[in-house]
Image 1: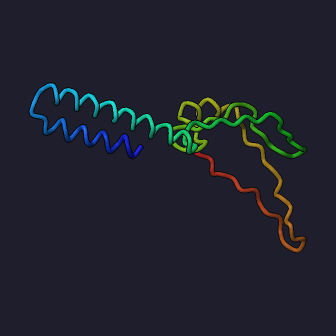
Image 2 (image 1 turned 90 degrees about the vertical axis):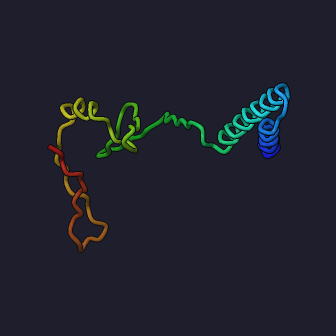
Image 3 (image 1 turned 30 degrees about the horizontal axis):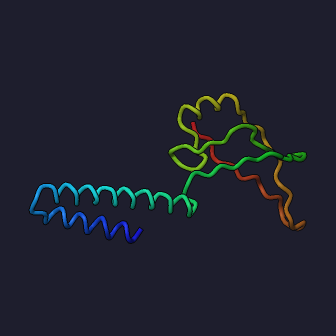
Length: 123
């Protein structure tokens, strides 16, 4: 990558200081080739370092008594991790209803039960 960058800059310098048209065309052509090579190498380095697209497939899910699970595809929206888009919120609002849950038992018997944390409902 360093060599392609240095050669691209050298050919760009030669193109800027060229006295003849054919020298300018040759130097600019080489500069263009070295710049494209540098861009391709930078993209390959990003893929090598793991910045590419990742995919995770879960094959077996065990949900025991009292547990909850999401069945289906989970996608992240452009607004953040796991935040559904506006049209998705409206579509699922009628399908999901509120079911009260008992409080979780406290790990300390002398203390009170811990209430289940919930997000406030939006109108």
